[in-house]
Image (cartoon, rainbow, N blue to C red; front, side, top):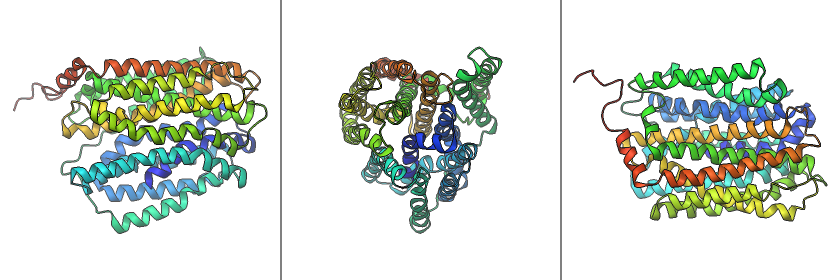
Length: 462
């Protein structure tokens, strides 16, 4: 239930963007922030929230996350302006960051039998497809039938029921030796992601060479330059730099960024195109129905991908996934304001197949060669990479297609062609990294990356 409402919030808002923009008089960049404020905070806090659950009690942190997310949803539905909506979206994300990583820890703790745990995780994974399928259609129906504010109402009863069930059934648990908190590393991650995202979203209006844009890019680079050596010196870092010397881990992280960048860009641009640009304009519900093939293919092919990964490893799934995403983008490169819906559907089907195939092997590739004690941290970094990718996808797509305009203009379609080329590039990148990160040499790099003491431990003696 927690994954359902967090997943819904990633997709249901997209279909409501045109309605939000009209009622709250929002520019395209402000609509980007409506999506990215949520994914940015989620990406920044996933690692911290997982650590807090291990330290303070998983049930306690999970319940806190449900309460904060539900309250944030209620406040979003009553937001009087775009600024307040963005602030309440950030509040939602704070709660959401306490749900998914902590829930996975609860599953691992409750289901001690390997078979039962695999079944539970399989049901957990299927919920991603369900939330992706429900989001656009349910959101479109609520926007057309009630109001855009109704998309946030759906979270309230689900959140309250989940809170009650957690109190009744979920046992409290803590890690025997929780990882230390890393406030400096956490702050550097937030500054890095926030400054990079803000620079990209606001650059078309401020100017790519303006003092603001250049300064923000410099701040992001400085944060990264400070983060890497700082984390390398810590005995229990927020992000383990050694992991990135493993080609499977680095490849999985980059694939996650590319795949979810493609998803974020696809959903954001396609929603504005169907409801604001294409003639005749579609309603929110019609736009949601049009993108149902993406969700349906994801729901069908994700379990198939999981079985393929289990039997043959991740390479085939990554290659097919990258090919599907790339072809989906390629079919949309020449769209116009009068392109028939029937001509769009093959692209939606192909993109859904690609995304369904590529998502399951990301975590598998990330933890390949990792010792069991480090697998949870590696999986958490992969999850963070997904949110970072979606954040950047929306930021870059909006910056390209809107070009700083206050609203969707007549040049939107021609400018969006560059976004679809970007999606094609993401597909090619996924295939390339899928090949490079699944070789025997790559697996050997994972073993070497974790061999020997950490830099912080070297020379400390026994």
